[in-house]
Length: 133
Image (cartoon, rainbow, N blue to C red):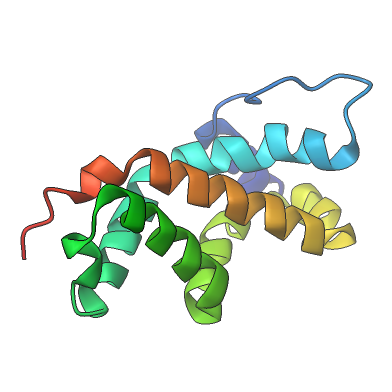
């Protein structure tokens, strides 16, 4: 188990954002664990979302940029199966210690995780422009 934890930590970058003694446990977890995982998984999140949009009859690709942003937010908030799949892609890269920390406050950490993922996808909405089908 220790080998898995070390390999996972080696894959990810260092903390992204400030982590200090004044940081709340949630903020520390966000910056030390969630942000590096979201950054590491960025390319797969884009492909997963693109595949989701294609399976939803390509409506996403016909929308204006503002409506695409709303679509991203709406889908991740309302499609429970899709959201759980995205969460699994993040949780699967937790170390055992991180998972044990996560389960203490999973509800708030899930909100942070999904909000950061939504913002990440929205900030890259132009990458979806070239999705020709």
